[in-house]
Length: 371
Ligand SMILES: [Zn+2]
Ligand SMILES: [Zn+2]
Figure (cartoon, helix red, strand yellow):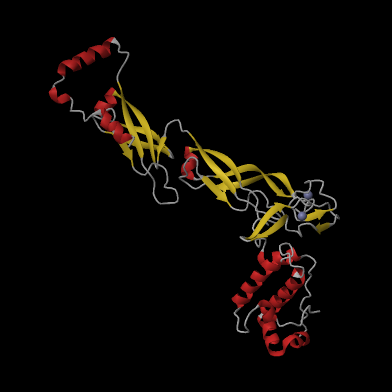
């Protein structure tokens, strides 16, 4: 049965031409003023019921049209009985209209779960390929015994009578400067907004249990050490219906015995013997994804840098690849036997000015290798 025969427009303080948005705004404004947890007016609850009823009619185009033409009687003949939604829990109505955000700090009843982070260690060759890695982690999940409600099966759950289900108690004080609203965690329900006759034995009323989980994490090719991959919704379960947090896999890349990474390039060194460097040589050398024949021209100098185009790391979420840069080291013989010594002494006698070129400077080459 209708709680009022007063004009719905008058209750909301609106002209009959008010738009849908204006109806909504007026309801929000009045609802904030009249919420029984906040208002000290003795008739706040009764007035709130009227406001909610007016909103129920005027926010619905069909009902509003009926009411505009035929008034309260028209609504009744149309089979609509305003005020028939359950007023037992006002906070539930608020949640339905506004979510839990009507009052700042009134979010204790539910909340988004926290994020979970785990580390994944891969080696550099895997980082170049972009592997899928199974990552185990611990996560708070909704308790299966109570379905996340925190109550033993069969236990009764009632809305907290102290805070009305909001989980917070509002203290309003008025002064010449205006109204001050303080919120505190409700002492009766400890912020849960509900009272449970028998808490769940498995989760101790928290609604959540710790679970072992594992996810297959797709690591994109070219990922860098320390970067994180986010998988949304795989973190800790939310509290009492709140959405789950996110899962972050932090990727660590093991140092490689042969390659040092420089952005998308890979640096490595190669040892040429003195004679290989002087005469030229072709060697089979490791790259990040296999072996490669590399040609060294006669007269290759120590500190020379040979660039293998496209043999570096893939560009993360981009195209192409970096280069592999080979820094040449030349080995000088340490243990000469008599024959070798004689030959080198012979060679020395035959040396002349043009045997050796001018070196551009080892330091400059080093700098270009590790630019
Ligand atoms: Zn439980
Ligand atoms: Zn409470």
